[in-house]
Length: 320
Image (cartoon, rainbow, N blue to C red; front, side, top):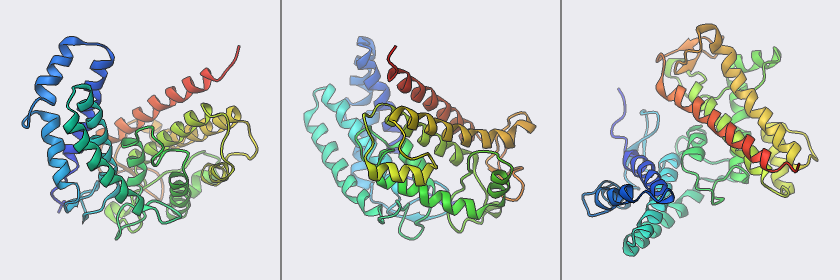
C-alpha cells in the first residue's frame, strides 16, 4: 500500500508558477503581468497566494515522503522545497507591491531554514530522523536551491552528504563495483539504507540527480576566483578530483565526473534503445520496476540542461 497524503504539492506548484511569473516580469510582458496580478497573487483564492497560505500553516504537518512509503513531520526534501517556494513567493509579492504578504512569506521561510540546519549531523544531511541516510536529499539540493549558499554545491553539508552516500551505494550494489572494475565511469545511486522495494536497487532518476548536482558544482567552481581549502578537500573526497588544481582545471574535472555518471546510465540503457525504467537491478544493471518512467527522463534531461549551463560558465572564464 502506498502512503498518503503527500503534502509537497503546494510548495512545488507555487514554486514553479512563481518562477514563471517572475520570468514575465523579467521579459516586461505587460499582459502576462496583469495575469499574474489577477490569477496568481490577487486574493486569497488565487493560485500562488492560496498555496503559500496553506504552506505557512501546514509545513510542519505529518506527511508522506518522496517515495510514498514513510510518514514523518521532518523531511528535508519537503522543507527545502517549502523554503524555496516561500522565498520566491516573497520576491513575487514584492514585485506586485504586496509588502505585507512578502514579509509573511519571508518570516515563514526563515522558520523553515532554522529547522533545516538540524538535518546536518556534522557528516551528512539527513532526510528524516528515523530514516537518515536517504538520497532524496540529493534531489532536494537541486529542486530547492536558491543560489544563496544555503545547502549549495560548494558547502560542507552538500559535499559531506555526497561523500557518505557514494561510499554507501558503492558498497551496497554489486553492479557499481562491477562497472568500476570494467572501467565504466560514474556511480549509481538508489534511495535509502534499508530499501527493499523490488529488492532495493539503483534508481536512474536519483543517479541523474547526482549528475546534475556535479554539473552545478562545476559551474560554481568555474565562476570562483578560488576554492576554500576545506571545501577543496571535500571535493577530492566526494568526486575524486585531483588536488592543487586551478579553478578552471578543477571545473573541467568536475564536468568529467558528471559526464561519468551519465555515461554509466548510458551503458545500461543504450542496449534497450535508451528506454529508462525506474530502477536497474543491483546485480546486473538490467531494467526493473516501472517502465519508461517520466521522472527518470525528466531528471536526465535536467542534468543535461545543467551540463550546458556549466559549459557556458566555463566558457565565460576563458580570455581570448
